[in-house]
Length: 423
Image 1 (cartoon, helix red, strand yellow):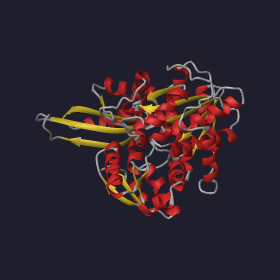
Image 2: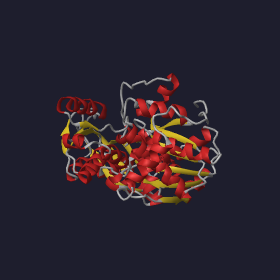
Image 3: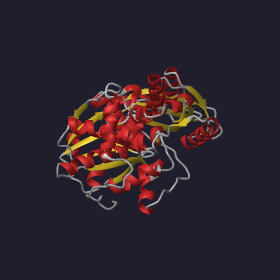
Image 4: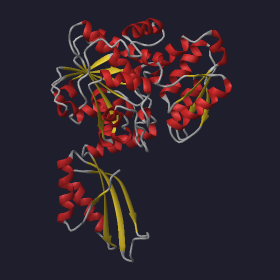
């Protein structure tokens, strides 16, 4: 855990409460004041009163329109005439596109190759020109900056800008209006604009009230640049970023957000890819909310008991669901993985002798175990198969880890050797 934040007034920080309050006035009538939903299910699991700030229901599907609009609305007329350029895996792209359309500004957006089709299509539908470049956000950012330097277009950075941070911080003001007695706030962090803005707002408001509100950032463990950077008190870029949470797949913290986060944020924790999958399924089933992986990291942290690991006994906890723009194809994969992690979906592979009745026996064992087969792959041909061998892969629905183990034990009792396949 990093050292507790200084509780004095932070006059030297690049964004202040006054900046965020001014941004809120600028955004009035432009963005939605998203709802806060109570989660009894998370409360039961964590022992805290848990609420979800639903920025997945924001215009363009994420919080990003807040910062993008504030940044672009403050451009001079000459700057607006030159147009804007940005780079994003999707959410910032859509936020910039929506803001540009409302302000009458031409926008060019660089997106990584392989970006989710719904995010690409939505960005184009909002009127922006889209250029595919690079294999990650950092490469797209570099190309966008080169274009800005050569063309004169204004570069709208996704997180390393004071106006962007102030715009994102308006979430903190809304949250405190909706949930005045919150004591702990969790949210995802990529470059850090959202976390820095919300921390600035809620910490300042808490100081005015003479109390403390804890702010916790959450990163995917395979894209976690903040823990090493905070430990070193310097920006530490990652050599590799690999996560389903593309909205926070950033290999290097932003300088401005980092300068705020190291002063104000209580801690930054990490969660596994399995925890992300489990969190998405949990939100779908228990809260009826469609949330993208980057937006679900706070819930994943609660499900993994991260607050308890930090020694935090939160009475009223808020989680910012930062976005809901998920590719349906990815959602299918994540649901399957999430069910597997929860022990409700099991895939096994077995080697059999090629003789009559083997498949019938397996089917009987699974049926008697009260599992439901959803798919079967039966093959006699393959590089690792000998003559007379058969490989069978079976997908089945189960009722939890104990039930899955019972199915496996029953198959073993019949002489089979099931190997669990990770989806």
